[in-house]
Amino acid sequence: MNFEIGTDILNIKRLENILKKYPHFINKYYTKEEIKIASSLKNPLSFYATRFAAKEAIFKALKGKFDFSEIEILKNMDGSPNPKILNHNDIKIKLSLSYEEDYAIAYCFVLF
Image (cartoon, rainbow, N blue to C red; front, side):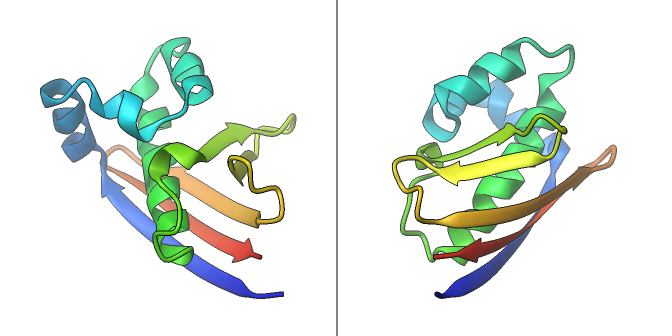
C-alpha cells in the first residue's frame, strides 16, 4: 500500500472574490451534493473555502490524477469530514480541516 500527504492554505477573501466574479466556478469545482449542502447554510463561504482547500490538498497528494469535481468532501455522522474520490473506493483519505476569519487550511493523508 502506498501513501501520500497533502496540505493547502487558502485566503477566504480571495475565494469570495472568485465566486463573485465567476459564478460558474462552483459548478466546476464542487459536486452537486456539496453545492446542495452549502446552499442550505447561512454562510456557505466557509464551507466552500474548507472544501476547496481540502480538494487542493488531495489534488496535490494524488499528483493531479483526479479533477476537483471528482473529489467530494461531505461529513460523517460525528461531524468529521468524509472525503472520497468518486468511483474510487479503493483510495482512503484522512482529512483535517480548519478555518479562521481569513484563512482555511486542510491537511490530508491518502492511502492507495
